[in-house]
Length: 364
Ligand code: M6R
Image (cartoon, rainbow, N blue to C red; front, side, top):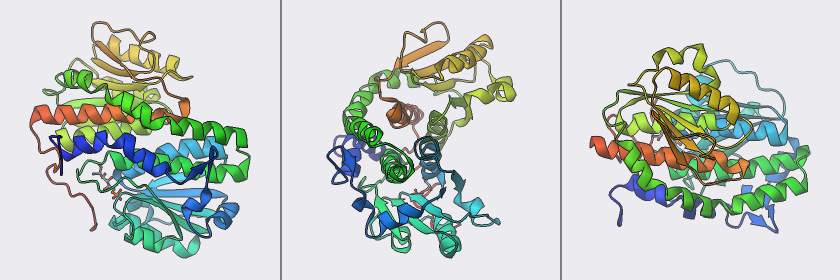
Protein backbone atom coordinates (compact mmCIF):
# COMPACT_ATOMS: atom_id res chain seq x y z
CA UNK A 1 0.00 0.00 0.00
CA UNK A 2 1.38 3.40 -1.04
CA UNK A 3 -0.58 5.20 1.66
CA UNK A 4 -0.32 8.96 1.25
CA UNK A 5 2.39 8.65 -1.39
CA UNK A 6 1.91 8.95 -5.13
CA UNK A 7 4.43 6.21 -5.88
CA UNK A 8 6.10 3.33 -4.06
CA UNK A 9 9.45 4.88 -4.89
CA UNK A 10 8.61 8.04 -2.97
CA UNK A 11 7.25 6.02 -0.06
CA UNK A 12 10.44 3.97 0.01
CA UNK A 13 12.61 7.10 -0.12
CA UNK A 14 10.75 8.43 2.92
CA UNK A 15 11.06 5.12 4.77
CA UNK A 16 14.83 5.43 4.90
CA UNK A 17 15.15 7.02 8.36
CA UNK A 18 13.10 4.12 9.76
CA UNK A 19 14.71 1.28 7.85
CA UNK A 20 18.31 2.31 8.49
CA UNK A 21 17.38 2.14 12.16
CA UNK A 22 16.14 -1.40 11.56
CA UNK A 23 19.48 -2.29 9.94
CA UNK A 24 21.25 -1.29 13.16
CA UNK A 25 18.67 -2.66 15.59
CA UNK A 26 19.98 -5.35 17.93
CA UNK A 27 23.39 -5.11 16.29
CA UNK A 28 24.92 -2.40 18.42
CA UNK A 29 25.40 -2.34 22.19
CA UNK A 30 27.36 -0.04 24.47
CA UNK A 31 28.45 1.98 21.50
CA UNK A 32 29.96 -1.04 19.74
CA UNK A 33 29.10 -3.62 17.11
CA UNK A 34 27.65 -6.99 18.17
CA UNK A 35 29.14 -9.27 15.58
CA UNK A 36 26.74 -12.12 16.41
CA UNK A 37 24.53 -10.20 13.98
CA UNK A 38 26.37 -12.01 11.18
CA UNK A 39 25.34 -15.41 12.51
CA UNK A 40 27.07 -18.45 13.94
CA UNK A 41 30.69 -18.89 12.99
CA UNK A 42 31.09 -15.32 11.76
CA UNK A 43 33.75 -14.32 14.29
CA UNK A 44 36.00 -17.24 13.35
CA UNK A 45 35.62 -16.33 9.69
CA UNK A 46 36.42 -12.65 10.26
CA UNK A 47 39.57 -13.67 12.15
CA UNK A 48 41.00 -15.16 8.98
CA UNK A 49 40.06 -12.58 6.35
CA UNK A 50 43.00 -11.09 4.47
CA UNK A 51 41.13 -9.52 1.59
CA UNK A 52 37.59 -8.90 0.41
CA UNK A 53 36.09 -9.60 -3.02
CA UNK A 54 32.76 -7.83 -3.47
CA UNK A 55 30.35 -8.96 -6.20
CA UNK A 56 27.01 -7.39 -7.11
CA UNK A 57 24.98 -5.80 -9.92
CA UNK A 58 23.43 -2.38 -10.49
CA UNK A 59 22.70 -0.36 -7.39
CA UNK A 60 24.11 -3.09 -5.15
CA UNK A 61 27.38 -2.82 -7.09
CA UNK A 62 27.49 0.88 -6.30
CA UNK A 63 27.08 0.08 -2.59
CA UNK A 64 30.06 -2.25 -2.97
CA UNK A 65 32.15 0.51 -4.51
CA UNK A 66 31.46 2.77 -1.52
CA UNK A 67 32.43 -0.07 0.82
CA UNK A 68 35.78 -0.40 -0.94
CA UNK A 69 36.69 3.14 0.14
CA UNK A 70 35.66 2.32 3.71
CA UNK A 71 37.37 -1.07 3.95
CA UNK A 72 40.68 0.07 2.51
CA UNK A 73 40.69 3.19 4.70
CA UNK A 74 39.43 1.77 7.99
CA UNK A 75 40.47 -1.89 7.83
CA UNK A 76 43.54 -1.52 5.66
CA UNK A 77 43.15 -4.77 3.71
CA UNK A 78 42.62 -5.02 -0.06
CA UNK A 79 39.04 -4.86 -1.29
CA UNK A 80 38.12 -5.62 -4.89
CA UNK A 81 34.71 -4.89 -6.37
CA UNK A 82 33.35 -6.23 -9.63
CA UNK A 83 30.02 -6.63 -11.38
CA UNK A 84 28.89 -10.23 -11.22
CA UNK A 85 28.37 -10.69 -14.97
CA UNK A 86 32.06 -9.96 -15.62
CA UNK A 87 33.50 -11.78 -12.65
CA UNK A 88 31.69 -15.05 -13.28
CA UNK A 89 32.96 -15.49 -16.81
CA UNK A 90 36.61 -14.58 -16.47
CA UNK A 91 39.59 -16.24 -14.88
CA UNK A 92 39.96 -14.69 -11.47
CA UNK A 93 42.86 -14.81 -9.07
CA UNK A 94 41.68 -15.20 -5.51
CA UNK A 95 44.42 -14.92 -2.92
CA UNK A 96 44.23 -17.06 0.19
CA UNK A 97 42.05 -15.55 2.91
CA UNK A 98 39.51 -14.02 0.51
CA UNK A 99 36.09 -13.22 1.90
CA UNK A 100 33.54 -13.35 -0.93
CA UNK A 101 30.97 -10.66 -0.21
CA UNK A 102 27.84 -10.55 -2.34
CA UNK A 103 25.41 -7.65 -2.10
CA UNK A 104 21.85 -8.01 -3.33
CA UNK A 105 18.45 -6.64 -2.50
CA UNK A 106 16.56 -9.64 -3.85
CA UNK A 107 19.06 -12.41 -3.17
CA UNK A 108 18.01 -13.92 -6.50
CA UNK A 109 20.03 -12.01 -9.10
CA UNK A 110 21.20 -14.70 -11.53
CA UNK A 111 24.72 -13.41 -12.16
CA UNK A 112 25.45 -12.69 -8.49
CA UNK A 113 24.26 -16.15 -7.50
CA UNK A 114 26.26 -17.77 -10.29
CA UNK A 115 29.38 -15.90 -9.17
CA UNK A 116 28.94 -17.26 -5.65
CA UNK A 117 28.47 -20.81 -6.93
CA UNK A 118 31.53 -20.44 -9.15
CA UNK A 119 33.94 -19.53 -6.33
CA UNK A 120 32.36 -21.07 -3.25
CA UNK A 121 35.04 -23.70 -2.91
CA UNK A 122 37.90 -21.36 -3.77
CA UNK A 123 37.39 -18.74 -1.08
CA UNK A 124 37.78 -18.57 2.68
CA UNK A 125 34.05 -17.98 3.16
CA UNK A 126 31.05 -16.23 1.70
CA UNK A 127 29.06 -13.43 3.26
CA UNK A 128 25.96 -11.91 1.74
CA UNK A 129 24.43 -8.54 2.52
CA UNK A 130 20.86 -9.14 1.46
CA UNK A 131 17.33 -7.88 1.96
CA UNK A 132 15.26 -11.02 1.45
CA UNK A 133 15.35 -13.67 4.19
CA UNK A 134 15.46 -17.20 2.85
CA UNK A 135 16.53 -16.07 -0.63
CA UNK A 136 19.01 -18.14 -2.64
CA UNK A 137 22.02 -15.97 -1.78
CA UNK A 138 21.17 -16.14 1.93
CA UNK A 139 20.73 -19.91 1.81
CA UNK A 140 23.90 -20.54 -0.14
CA UNK A 141 26.27 -18.17 1.66
CA UNK A 142 28.16 -19.16 4.81
CA UNK A 143 27.07 -16.09 6.74
CA UNK A 144 24.77 -13.17 6.09
CA UNK A 145 23.79 -9.76 7.30
CA UNK A 146 20.20 -8.86 6.49
CA UNK A 147 19.53 -5.25 5.55
CA UNK A 148 16.02 -5.26 7.09
CA UNK A 149 14.70 -2.66 4.64
CA UNK A 150 11.36 -4.45 4.21
CA UNK A 151 9.91 -5.21 0.77
CA UNK A 152 11.06 -2.81 -1.94
CA UNK A 153 8.39 -2.48 -4.65
CA UNK A 154 9.77 0.32 -6.82
CA UNK A 155 12.04 -1.09 -9.51
CA UNK A 156 14.45 1.76 -8.84
CA UNK A 157 16.29 0.76 -5.71
CA UNK A 158 16.37 3.38 -2.93
CA UNK A 159 16.04 2.12 0.64
CA UNK A 160 17.81 -1.10 -0.30
CA UNK A 161 20.91 0.96 -1.19
CA UNK A 162 21.13 3.05 1.99
CA UNK A 163 20.52 0.02 4.22
CA UNK A 164 23.18 -1.91 2.29
CA UNK A 165 25.58 0.91 3.07
CA UNK A 166 24.77 0.68 6.78
CA UNK A 167 25.25 -3.11 6.70
CA UNK A 168 28.55 -2.63 4.88
CA UNK A 169 29.68 -0.14 7.50
CA UNK A 170 28.94 -2.77 10.17
CA UNK A 171 30.96 -5.27 8.12
CA UNK A 172 33.80 -2.75 7.96
CA UNK A 173 33.75 -2.52 11.77
CA UNK A 174 33.83 -6.31 12.18
CA UNK A 175 36.87 -6.56 9.91
CA UNK A 176 38.49 -3.42 11.27
CA UNK A 177 38.63 -4.80 14.80
CA UNK A 178 41.05 -7.44 13.58
CA UNK A 179 43.24 -5.00 11.73
CA UNK A 180 43.95 -2.16 14.09
CA UNK A 181 40.74 -0.15 13.98
CA UNK A 182 40.80 1.16 17.55
CA UNK A 183 37.97 0.76 20.02
CA UNK A 184 37.83 4.54 20.18
CA UNK A 185 37.35 4.82 16.42
CA UNK A 186 34.69 2.10 16.45
CA UNK A 187 32.77 3.96 19.15
CA UNK A 188 33.06 7.17 17.14
CA UNK A 189 31.64 5.49 14.02
CA UNK A 190 28.83 3.79 15.93
CA UNK A 191 27.78 7.05 17.53
CA UNK A 192 27.80 8.72 14.11
CA UNK A 193 25.65 5.88 12.75
CA UNK A 194 23.16 6.43 15.53
CA UNK A 195 22.56 9.98 14.29
CA UNK A 196 21.86 8.73 10.77
CA UNK A 197 18.04 8.41 10.97
CA UNK A 198 17.80 12.03 12.08
CA UNK A 199 20.20 13.22 9.37
CA UNK A 200 18.23 11.38 6.71
CA UNK A 201 15.07 12.98 8.03
CA UNK A 202 16.73 16.41 7.68
CA UNK A 203 17.91 15.67 4.17
CA UNK A 204 14.39 14.66 3.13
CA UNK A 205 13.38 18.19 4.00
CA UNK A 206 15.24 19.25 0.83
CA UNK A 207 12.43 17.72 -1.24
CA UNK A 208 10.54 20.93 -2.04
CA UNK A 209 13.68 22.72 -3.29
CA UNK A 210 14.70 19.67 -5.30
CA UNK A 211 11.27 19.48 -6.87
CA UNK A 212 11.72 23.09 -8.03
CA UNK A 213 15.19 22.30 -9.32
CA UNK A 214 13.93 19.30 -11.28
CA UNK A 215 12.20 21.55 -13.84
CA UNK A 216 15.62 22.36 -15.33
CA UNK A 217 16.06 18.70 -16.31
CA UNK A 218 12.73 17.87 -17.88
CA UNK A 219 13.73 19.02 -21.37
CA UNK A 220 17.31 17.80 -21.27
CA UNK A 221 18.62 14.77 -23.15
CA UNK A 222 21.89 14.27 -21.28
CA UNK A 223 23.49 14.94 -17.92
CA UNK A 224 26.73 14.41 -16.05
CA UNK A 225 27.11 13.40 -12.41
CA UNK A 226 30.37 14.13 -10.60
CA UNK A 227 31.81 13.14 -7.25
CA UNK A 228 35.10 12.32 -5.60
CA UNK A 229 36.10 9.59 -3.15
CA UNK A 230 33.18 7.57 -1.75
CA UNK A 231 30.93 10.21 -3.31
CA UNK A 232 31.95 9.03 -6.76
CA UNK A 233 29.92 5.80 -6.47
CA UNK A 234 27.13 7.95 -5.03
CA UNK A 235 27.25 10.00 -8.25
CA UNK A 236 27.16 6.72 -10.22
CA UNK A 237 24.06 5.71 -8.32
CA UNK A 238 22.47 9.14 -8.91
CA UNK A 239 23.08 8.77 -12.65
CA UNK A 240 21.64 5.24 -12.68
CA UNK A 241 18.50 6.47 -10.91
CA UNK A 242 17.99 9.30 -13.40
CA UNK A 243 18.38 7.13 -16.49
CA UNK A 244 16.31 4.31 -15.05
CA UNK A 245 13.17 6.30 -14.31
CA UNK A 246 13.37 9.49 -16.37
CA UNK A 247 15.10 7.99 -19.45
CA UNK A 248 17.52 10.91 -19.54
CA UNK A 249 21.00 9.83 -20.49
CA UNK A 250 23.14 10.31 -17.39
CA UNK A 251 26.82 9.56 -17.05
CA UNK A 252 28.90 9.68 -13.94
CA UNK A 253 32.57 10.50 -13.63
CA UNK A 254 35.06 10.94 -10.86
CA UNK A 255 35.39 14.75 -10.95
CA UNK A 256 39.11 14.42 -11.59
CA UNK A 257 38.43 12.70 -14.91
CA UNK A 258 36.59 15.68 -16.35
CA UNK A 259 39.59 17.07 -18.18
CA UNK A 260 40.39 13.66 -19.61
CA UNK A 261 37.46 13.68 -21.98
CA UNK A 262 33.94 14.43 -20.73
CA UNK A 263 34.60 18.18 -20.51
CA UNK A 264 34.28 18.21 -24.30
CA UNK A 265 30.57 17.45 -23.87
CA UNK A 266 29.84 20.36 -21.60
CA UNK A 267 27.66 23.17 -22.92
CA UNK A 268 24.41 24.83 -21.84
CA UNK A 269 22.42 21.71 -22.67
CA UNK A 270 24.46 19.46 -20.44
CA UNK A 271 23.46 19.87 -16.78
CA UNK A 272 26.20 18.82 -14.39
CA UNK A 273 25.13 17.47 -11.01
CA UNK A 274 27.70 17.36 -8.25
CA UNK A 275 27.78 16.01 -4.71
CA UNK A 276 30.15 18.23 -2.78
CA UNK A 277 30.42 17.67 0.97
CA UNK A 278 32.71 19.92 2.94
CA UNK A 279 35.81 17.76 3.12
CA UNK A 280 39.43 17.65 2.10
CA UNK A 281 38.50 17.20 -1.56
CA UNK A 282 36.32 20.28 -1.79
CA UNK A 283 38.98 22.61 -3.20
CA UNK A 284 39.82 20.13 -5.91
CA UNK A 285 36.14 19.73 -6.70
CA UNK A 286 35.66 23.50 -6.86
CA UNK A 287 38.37 23.72 -9.47
CA UNK A 288 36.55 21.04 -11.51
CA UNK A 289 33.32 22.99 -11.24
CA UNK A 290 34.97 26.16 -12.49
CA UNK A 291 36.03 24.24 -15.57
CA UNK A 292 32.39 23.37 -16.20
CA UNK A 293 31.23 26.93 -15.57
CA UNK A 294 33.82 28.34 -17.94
CA UNK A 295 32.26 26.22 -20.71
CA UNK A 296 28.77 27.52 -20.07
CA UNK A 297 27.63 24.32 -18.34
CA UNK A 298 24.73 24.54 -15.93
CA UNK A 299 25.75 23.33 -12.47
CA UNK A 300 23.58 21.75 -9.80
CA UNK A 301 25.53 21.35 -6.60
CA UNK A 302 24.51 19.50 -3.46
CA UNK A 303 26.86 21.13 -1.03
CA UNK A 304 27.90 20.63 2.56
CA UNK A 305 28.74 24.29 2.84
CA UNK A 306 26.81 26.58 0.56
CA UNK A 307 29.06 29.48 1.56
CA UNK A 308 31.97 27.80 -0.14
CA UNK A 309 30.05 27.28 -3.37
CA UNK A 310 28.23 30.42 -4.37
CA UNK A 311 24.90 30.47 -6.07
CA UNK A 312 25.29 32.53 -9.25
CA UNK A 313 24.35 32.60 -12.91
CA UNK A 314 24.38 28.98 -14.08
CA UNK A 315 25.07 27.59 -10.62
CA UNK A 316 22.34 26.29 -8.33
CA UNK A 317 23.49 25.27 -4.89
CA UNK A 318 21.41 23.32 -2.40
CA UNK A 319 22.63 22.94 1.15
CA UNK A 320 22.78 19.37 2.47
CA UNK A 321 22.70 18.99 6.28
CA UNK A 322 26.10 18.89 7.91
CA UNK A 323 27.14 15.27 8.44
CA UNK A 324 30.09 13.40 9.92
CA UNK A 325 32.49 12.46 7.11
CA UNK A 326 31.79 8.75 7.54
CA UNK A 327 28.10 9.27 6.72
CA UNK A 328 28.50 11.49 3.66
CA UNK A 329 27.95 8.75 1.09
CA UNK A 330 24.71 7.68 2.75
CA UNK A 331 23.21 11.12 3.31
CA UNK A 332 24.15 12.59 -0.11
CA UNK A 333 22.30 9.72 -1.77
CA UNK A 334 18.96 11.19 -0.66
CA UNK A 335 18.97 14.41 -2.73
CA UNK A 336 19.95 12.44 -5.84
CA UNK A 337 17.08 9.98 -5.31
CA UNK A 338 14.68 12.89 -4.92
CA UNK A 339 16.04 14.64 -8.00
CA UNK A 340 15.52 11.60 -10.23
CA UNK A 341 12.07 11.05 -8.75
CA UNK A 342 10.83 14.59 -9.41
CA UNK A 343 12.32 14.69 -12.91
CA UNK A 344 10.53 11.42 -13.73
CA UNK A 345 7.25 12.73 -12.33
CA UNK A 346 7.58 15.85 -14.51
CA UNK A 347 8.26 13.69 -17.53
CA UNK A 348 5.25 11.53 -16.72
CA UNK A 349 7.05 8.20 -16.84
CA UNK A 350 5.96 5.08 -15.01
CA UNK A 351 8.11 5.73 -11.95
CA UNK A 352 7.59 2.44 -10.14
CA UNK A 353 7.71 0.26 -13.22
CA UNK A 354 10.11 1.84 -15.73
CA UNK A 355 10.00 0.50 -19.27
CA UNK A 356 12.07 -2.57 -20.14
CA UNK A 357 13.12 -3.26 -16.53
CA UNK A 358 12.23 -5.95 -13.99
CA UNK A 359 12.60 -5.71 -10.23
CA UNK A 360 14.58 -8.88 -9.98
CA UNK A 361 16.90 -10.06 -12.74
CA UNK A 362 16.73 -13.81 -12.32
CA UNK A 363 17.78 -14.63 -15.87
CA UNK A 364 20.98 -13.59 -17.59
O1 M6R B 1 18.42 -7.58 -6.18
P1 M6R B 1 19.78 -7.04 -6.54
O2 M6R B 1 20.26 -6.04 -5.54
O3 M6R B 1 20.78 -8.15 -6.72
O4 M6R B 1 19.58 -6.32 -7.92
C1 M6R B 1 20.67 -5.77 -8.60
C2 M6R B 1 20.21 -4.82 -9.69
O5 M6R B 1 19.41 -5.50 -10.64
C3 M6R B 1 19.42 -3.64 -9.13
O6 M6R B 1 20.14 -2.96 -8.16
C4 M6R B 1 19.04 -2.65 -10.26
O7 M6R B 1 20.20 -2.05 -10.76
C5 M6R B 1 18.05 -1.61 -9.74
N1 M6R B 1 16.89 -1.56 -10.59
C6 M6R B 1 18.61 -0.24 -9.64
O8 M6R B 1 17.69 0.69 -9.22
